[in-house]
Image 1 (cartoon, one colour):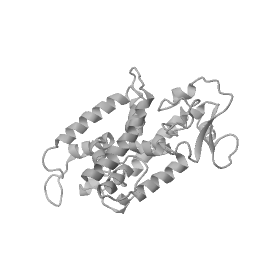
Image 2 (spheres, one colour):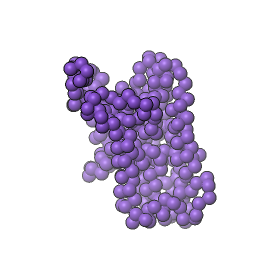
Image 3 (cartoon, one colour):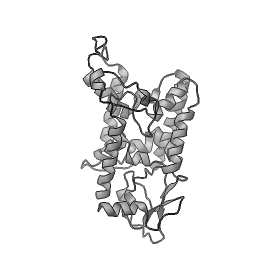
Image 4 (cartoon, helix red, strand yellow):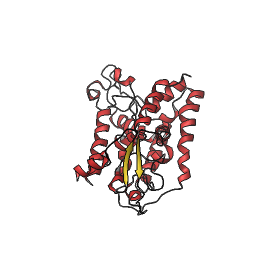
Length: 286
């Protein structure tokens, strides 16, 4: 429990640090400083009122829309993936935090066919690369439920008067896409209450990119031979992985909750003491 609380602190800190542009309340304008030229390895909509940085998926779409290969965002994501796999999904992603918290609602729980996880690669190919390339529009950003929650709704509710023009920042009413986004968001929020991280596992294109590195990343999970298959790791896992069967599954978000089981540990490409650093952290927090 203490380890989980520590991870919640990290998730909250990641959300706050990537969305700290408080002067928006004075300027009523998006942050256009140099920091917006840098991506963070999480979904962090460019249009979020408090966003200090950019979303890598939005940046990739921007490059695709201009028919330019996205060397910078892909290099960043590749570096993060090689080092820690999908760990940013488990430790600092704001939308991951939303899913974790809503799953705590006491309702009947359901899972889905694991083969649906391949959809996220289709979303990456079609909505992040192909459609922006063909149409010049950032289609995933238009429909992203994380962007709806953290950007579209706050701006629509607030819609401050622009001090430069004396007019509302968002003149006119919301368009059809906004209401479509609200419906999609409502469906996802309800789904989060009954299924472990369905957006991360089925639809997230950022997760699709990071998942390609889980089996080769610097940080790896290891299950020792004494494992008796009690499935405690699966019950602890925020994405419902049978860790003893697939310790480095593409869906693993490296949250390290499973190391609470004595048979699961963290190993790396460099020599570490036999007792892994993750278990030391968990022990210190108990």
